[in-house]
Amino acid sequence: MSEKGEVDLTGAKQNTGVWLVKVPKYLSQQWAKASGRGEVGKLRIGKNQGKAEVEFTLNEDLTMIDSLGDKPSGVQAPRDHPFTMQTVGGQTLAVFTETQSESSKGQSEERSDGSTSVSGAGSGPERRHRFSFLTERISLEGLVVQRAECRPAVSENYMKLKRLQIEELSKPVRLSQQLEKAVTTNYKPVANHSYNLEYDRKKKEEGKRARVDKQQVLDMLFSAFEKHQYYNIKDLVDITKQPVSYLKEILRDIGIYNVKGTHKNTWELKPEYRHYQGGEEEEEKETND
Image 1 (tube, rainbow, N blue to C red):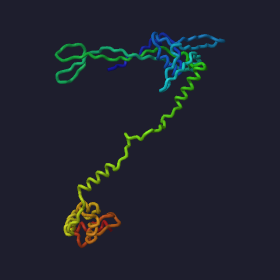
Image 2 (cartoon, rainbow, N blue to C red):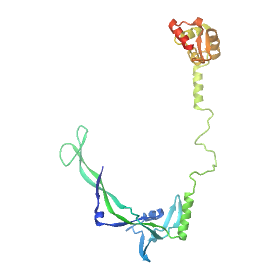
Image 3 (cartoon, helix red, strand yellow):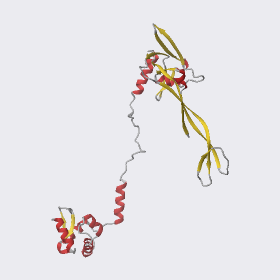
Image 4 (cartoon, rainbow, N blue to C red):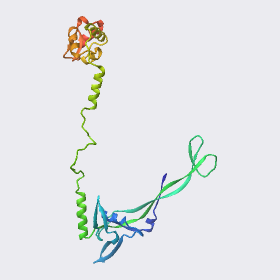
């Protein structure tokens, strides 16, 4: 659990001034390797013709850059880094630090009914656990009075480092690779796909459609047309379980195939075979008209 603490403005009262310096990425990475007292180098501040001259010298123990990207580099970082001084430009900039401290706030109480409550010190038959909060402490370190940019001095080590950085950045994200043997683990070719196998299985289970007596087919068709006036050939095949060619031969005797209109590509009975109610038949005629 965490709580937001108050902002410590002691730095504002002390009128502490700080510098805001931009440093190269490799330099900050080398600083992170510092051990012991954390000494990373020396800063020399002087004046030349009334202008401030500032130069940072990196500690010699931190000059070796182990790797760039995925491969070892074997290069040394430049040691000398002169500052390019800049003005704040009328801006009000400040530096804050944020720290977390753990503090105990109370106890959690587990009751016999399974519920949990939070309380201070106390006693009772319930089981209690102490818990703590992480308090965020924000402190004002000072106001920015000077801006600067830390740049490496041009040297052989610096030029070698830049060349390796450019080579690393120019590497393509995707690389072509020549295969010495066929890939057999993924995307293996198959003789027949699963959906084809499923279709063949269903076809075998249903068996070959055998022709039945014509009168039996007529009875099934008349029974179906008593429920609905229009059917497509696929539905009639499912109902009668007959071959398409045999079924169409029978339908031509008793039915009409609609080639246009609302019920396009469907079959209906010829007028002499219909047994619809008068109102329904007239309504169908008006719809077709």
